[in-house]
Length: 358
Image 1 (cartoon, helix red, strand yellow):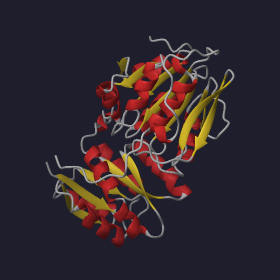
Image 2 (cartoon, rainbow, N blue to C red):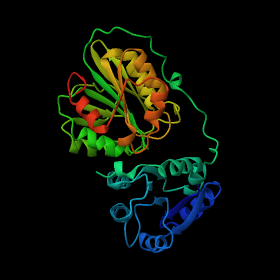
Image 3 (cartoon, rainbow, N blue to C red):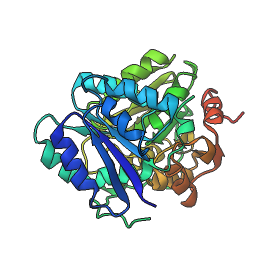
């Protein structure tokens, strides 16, 4: 299957470099490169793309308005190619809420070399996006070489099995990726302030997670914040791993505390779900609930098995409610999942202070 891609960006350099870069993948065909959404819509009348790469800030019609129009008239996977500015982060998060699949950031300088170095990331995002279930966002070729793969051993040691703990306080460790921004918005906006503390890894670039946490905090009864070292994981609190850093949960007496630390990508990601899950397996064991939700790849699969083996209850989001059933599928295949649930059922389960099923 050939994936038809349309690039919409007002930068001639970005259009040129992306076109050259993507054309090297045998399964991708760039059917057009438009300098603004008005021209893009004219091109789309001739041939509709399978995936759109979209800039946000453009003349005549901004990317957000264009995205909303596309999702209302002909839902199509859209990858946002956004600047790293604070303003750009806020607009991009609004775009994710409106139905975009994922974010690829671009710097204000050195953009050509950045795009060339990010070729594999773009191609993998496109391949994953084409199979996404867009209805859950809205209420063939061989892989290219990838970066060296690390596991959670790079950050902390494996847990001992079936550890006993002095505290009975429950905590939740949650990992997600593609489609996760919308899933987390659904979940956290419906949880009561009495729910157990939640530590979250959402694959997202640096500088975006603080704005994302701020957005969720305004929608939720919980206190939602970007994690900082020393944060206590309490009932009614949700902490989100900062982009570009790992989030670990450590136990100090009867308290659970966040540790944010630098480290190499684990399972190709930083922050990594595997790192969070392993830390919770070590610090909380059977007092934890592990949840893995929509996303591409296999980050979290090994960490969930470690959670499971220390006595924690583990849940994977079901295929029907996922945007991309990648991470949950891999976690199930690794034998670390106790239950498979819809996003609605996960929300109901986390709403209970004792985390028992409903």
